[in-house]
Length: 271
Image 1 (cartoon, rainbow, N blue to C red):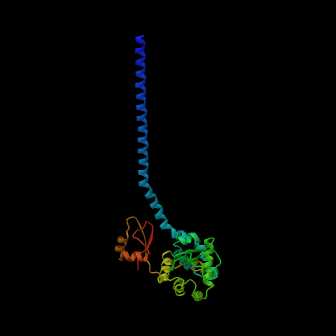
Image 2 (image 1 turned 45 degrees about the vertical axis):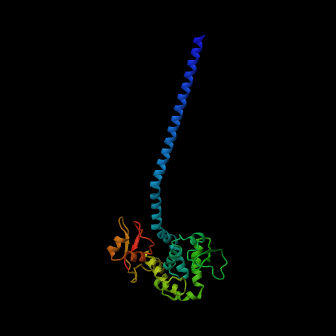
Image 3 (image 1 turned 135 degrees about the horizontal axis):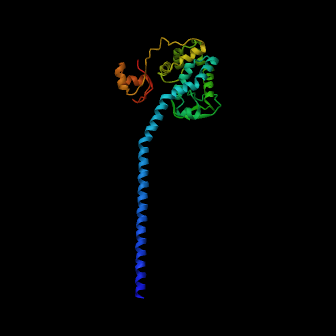
């Protein structure tokens, strides 16, 4: 009888010890898995922290490099069409579109399809939006698509007497057109003509004028700009030393807000 109780006691103790061992093993395994998951998560986060900015940087540089060229490719046909129909130089129309809309990237353009910064003015019956410009909360025209903005820009210039002198200028003379727009009050910026001319000559937009006029394209005598395509290792400082300009002059000529330049970017490197 005593032997029976002894055997039961031994068996009970063995079971208890076995259960505790299994619990410890299970807990240890679970802790190990948690540690592995946490470590794995940290590793992934660490990798993302290293690779993600590089990816965004590439996209950003690509956008800066290509947005104006993409804009020209998208709207050159509309500009040439309007030159044929309304006698407005395609180069001027494209340059204004690039400048006024920041190559289609400005907030006003994105929400209104207004590529030329045309305000509502008296008689406008279309949709409107409000945007800070010369004054706070000014009224600007809204279009269903950019094509309507391009056409309305032509109608705007041809229907107002203050721009009538522009249509007496020799066809394709974008320099006089740029100055004439400023004199007629299209923009308040005193450097508006210089900015338009710089854009036209930087991107050779006057070749679209000659295409409409059926002439061969030639660089005009007024084009004294020298271009440099940025390569790996170029900085504004190194280019300023190479071309005899100051960094401030390079930034001013190219309308740069910072010292950042990207490979493949075209810079004007002469006064």
